[in-house]
Image 1 (tube, rainbow, N blue to C red):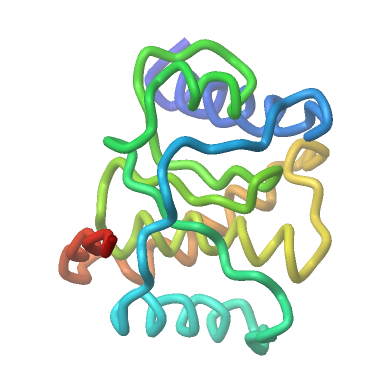
Image 2: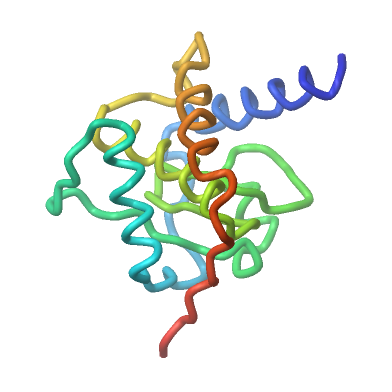
Length: 156
């Protein structure tokens, strides 16, 4: 299997892991959500626009967490398989986006998965044709050359 095949296999494993019911996974997370910034809010709305969705204030926004704040063991438990590192992911069972790379395109990709689940009612693990990942990648590419994001500071 070549690099592209391994990448697709890894993405499918992540999506399949999300199929494990939330009731079988503790929902408690160890670190607080990072505060939103104007830059993040603008990106959130631009992704919704790209998906032809109107932002609805009654739907909870995803919690944003920096990968450095999440121990690999906790991430493995939430993602459903053992992994030595924390990577970019939307975890629908706790409505959280974990980012290891704070780039606009990476966050846009995870926002697409958030909108697919919360606004369109998609079950990411049941996507046999992988259209959810293709849509997320297509919208991610719209932001490919955008400047990096600043990791929001946690105010205590």
